Image (tube, rainbow, N blue to C red; front, top):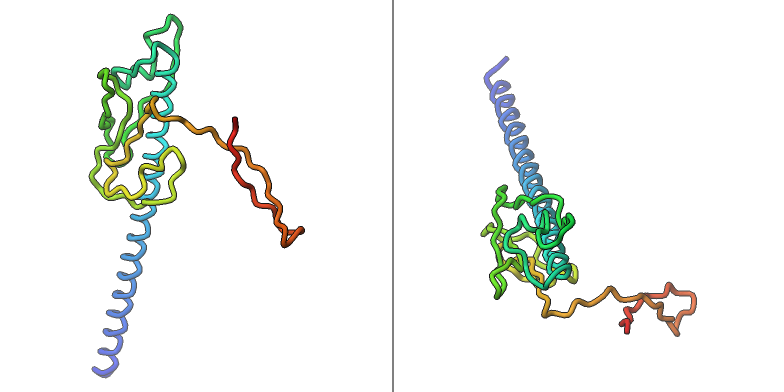
Length: 179
């Protein structure tokens, strides 16, 4: 083998290794993004479970908020066993069982939030219950609150609206308020 052929083989191997490294870097970035989105989804699920449990706790008794998250596991205000959560959720972003607490005026817990200061991937297109999260700059701004003072809007009924220009067109649903 002459020296020119050996140099060509060496360059080919170097380029192959460089392309494999680039491919692995891109794969790692995609994996990291997917993992972050999964954790975000878990945060939305756990936070909304806490919000619903706090709401049920508040509405089922003498209109007071729980003093601790453990009160959502077993309501001691009632003679029977009343459970609003089956378990306490870990914060998927920090991996800890510790949550930030939003205190009510009476000292109870009216909401929870993640203690993570990372910036969220999702910044728009939230559901109705989480609409306040739009434009938040960090996860700790996502406060899962139950506020009895705000009116909860029921899911509207869908009524089809005819298209006068095209009678064969698919009819689009339009929300109607219920009274």
